Structures are given as structure tokens and as C-alpha cells.
Image (cartoon, rainbow, N blue to C red; front, side, top):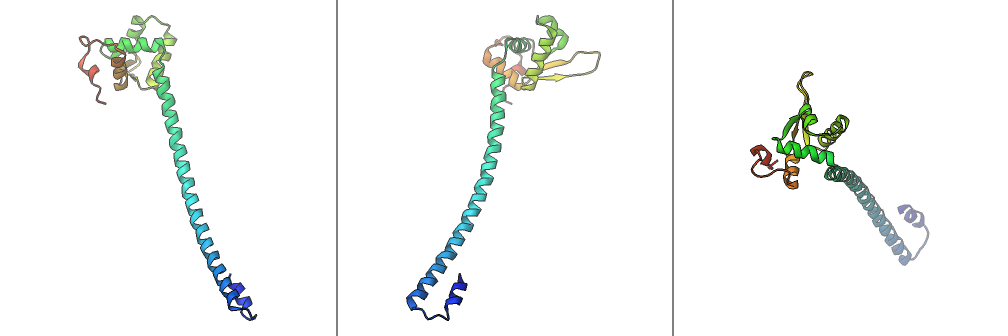
Length: 162
């Protein structure tokens, strides 16, 4: 706004008007600085908002997976119960014999449990069946549900440190 002062310098004005123009120019400069600060703050807040939204989405996904894993069907519970009582490890053929359920349902439940970190599978070669073993999460779940008695629990099944 100094151009206003330049324009008016040749016009005879009172000292009061010149002082008011100077004050208006100062206020205008202060306003421009405040706008710049607010724009910077707004940009920072937008960045924080995006980060919070990403974190929120991750937490929602984790919650959905945890909720799904807590709502195990009877077939999945039966598999965890069997593995927890048989030392935590069985192959597919053994489970087919010991659990009376259709093979497709057994495979579905095993895949579901593996996807939700209750089991790990080990494939050795084509002549031997896939072996399934309870993970730390699966062992803890079995203990929490009371699937394992203290007398028939192997030491590795009780390890809930990880």
C-alpha cells in the first residue's frame, strides 16, 4: 500500500490523514503476515489429518482382522483344540483322520486360521502332506480357551512370551 502514500504525497493532506494511512499500511502488512502464518498452519494441519486418516485405516483393518479371528467357527475351534492337545503340530492327513469334517471345510478352516496367524504351515515335498503348527497366538488362544490341561501341556505350548 505504499503506492497510496506515493500517490498522495503531492496532495496537501493533513498530518492526521497521513498518520491514518501509515497505520492502515501497517495493519495491512500485519494481516498479510497473519494470513501467511495461517496458510502454513493449515497446510501442516492437512498433513497431520492425512497421517491420522492413514493410521485410522490401519487400525480399522487390524480391528476387523482381530474381530474376525475372535469369532472363530466350531471347525476352527476344533482344529485349535486338536493341535493344542497333540503337541501343537499335525499334518493334513492326520487331521483328516482325527477330525470328522469334509476335506474342503478342513482346508478352508486351516487357511482361515493361517491367515489370522493362529497356524503356520510347512510344505516339505509332494510325497508328504502339509504340516500345520500352532503359532504363539494360537497357543495363547488355546490356553485362554482352556483347551489344554496343565498335565498334558508340552513346555513349548505354554510359552506365551512372544
